[in-house]
Image (cartoon, rainbow, N blue to C red):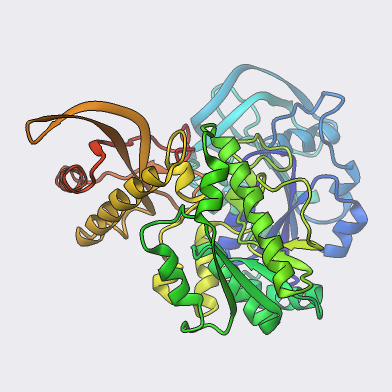
Length: 513
């Protein structure tokens, strides 16, 4: 990567990678490393600045994660956020106590506009708070630069030592002027040139992959979705014919999608790839028979994917590496590190304990969806593929509540094709970042053609989001929902009711299971 970088030390919060993303949006490379990283390793990286993240712990607990106090003597600017702010002050002689009043959510914060972090910020600004512990007294050498009605130290700075801390989260969109605050730290405090671009990521990734793979052979798990497609083209540019792409048609894809994927990546497509299509529909249906629990479904599909890849690898010959299009929301939701498990993604938490490959390569692991799309454009992938609707690895299995059967899959495929088509015709396909049909496990009485029916209810889901870590239900016009409903009920035999999901993320996830 470019030498100029901001290092983010991870103390276990849900938003930690989001901090790195915000820094990268300022055209400065940033990456997240564990808080256990040694001082020597930090010196070797030579970051222009360090950010300490939030986390669920309390600093005065014996087992709380802590960095060395020597970190603050390296001469590198440090910004502490939430837990990171408390830890900085605690280690340097300040007082951290249980807060008499918990602060959570949108909070009015009074700031000193003369402070370095708050240049160009309103004297009263809205920030996102989430804490039950607070800094009662800042460490020696710090001056208070922000406060709220109940939090005496919402921010503080020690300009002489280049140390800064905020009790709130500037990285989330709910902090209205958070980007300005981070930009002040990155540009004015750390003196970054802000000249990093996505092509730096692509060029460096290709170089690193070549060095890692050497003369080895690589198998890529290609689903045809955005993430795996970008990973495949990235690997193709790095190792060429050493790469074999295996597309597993597990029978859980969208309507006609298997043929569409083969048309793009197969022998008639624009990419010079070794492409293998495996038709394994019956194999997956058999494994999923009778299974209703969503986590169990994900893990079954994840393991079966790996077993298919292993079998194909043996046919190809000795294969050393497996490539997957894992991106950061997959990682954080699967609960790796200290974050809570939300759901296991088939290519992260859903992996079996034993995998018959030398190593798994995940070149997109630190990127969010929009960054993956930028990388795809940088690689020359056509826009219609780069901006294709996101699709989960377990496919329609997690858009079918309860047991998965071939009959249910066809219902979802047909209904989903109608929804996607009408979204395109109405011009809302660019407005909603993800939209699809899911099949509920509910059946209800209906009346069609003067006859009683007892069919399934399906659910329309459409959300707007930037990073897929948070999302809001898309406000679709009633005329569009009504047309989609009419078409599905009339054209898809077996579905008699249609619902629209109005839930955001959180509290829901984007997918149903």
